[in-house]
Length: 220
Length: 218
View 1 (spheres, helix red, strand yellow):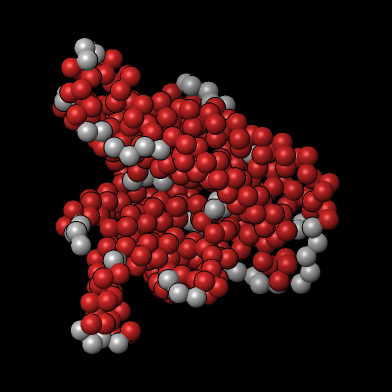
View 2 (cartoon, helix red, strand yellow):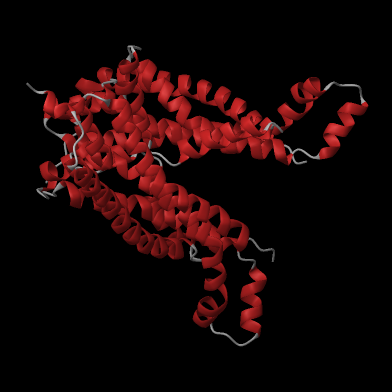
């Protein structure tokens, strides 16, 4: 009687596509915001004032050293109770993942800026650049170049980590796989498809990262 | 908005029980991931093309698919083959397999960092290939790889928090129960978040202290 449900149908393709759309949407939005936050925090981290440079640590360290799933639950289940901020699952996922990406990205930015030798700054000043012009024209291009491979690796990681949002009831690729598994009772096949889909998105990116890493590497 | 952490003291033993499972799972996965990481690193270092390909495919596959799907695959997929899975064992297995990929990359870069002179020297002293690896190359490369390995272990502890989704009562799982029982999720989760922070800080402190003792420059 229920055998008709056990088969994968043509419509399940659309279900998977919708789920991929959700995964990509969450990932793209959160890495965009995360990159912006990361740049701001990373630049503040490089301040010469020790107090100012320590301020972002209050934000960075707890987010880097705790599980993402706890952070997600905190925003999704915790905030409505304590502060009456009711977020739907998508908003909670995007906010948490953005902040999480921002924390990791700011460390990358900080390290990249620190990796530029001091001579570069001095040479810029000697050529008559002001502080801002120096940063914009000499330091920033080199920082960006150093940043790209690490950033892509982080983005790939965030794509995979975005699967955690399935635990707060968002229908992303992982949740879609779970739902179809429960319906068809064929976990091997369904999770195989999910593996393949994730792999197809993420593998080209990781190849790109490795290629850029070789291309971008330079000695001062 | 008010915060009240007093009720947590009643649930402290329960959370501690959860933390025990987190530690057990992490250590089990650490051991498994380390052994698998060494094996895969050796496969990737070998001259045999098939072994090399298998190693590379293993690493690429694990790095490019989410841990959660790997966990579900093992937990829900293995019974289809007739292997009945215990949640804790599955969690250790999944975490160990997942962490073997970064471990392999780290150990491999450690092996590649050992200079050729070490091999030549030990051959000149009459060591065989296996003895060279066992007594000279391996200890040196492990010392080189110690720091990234520990940061990978910290990552593993943090990732282990999602195993509650296959009904393991680890720290995150018990905190979910406590949050549901007390209806004060914010306090519970922020406490757990800080507990994980403290735990990782202690771990990284210990690893730094050990690293200072055993680190070498070639």
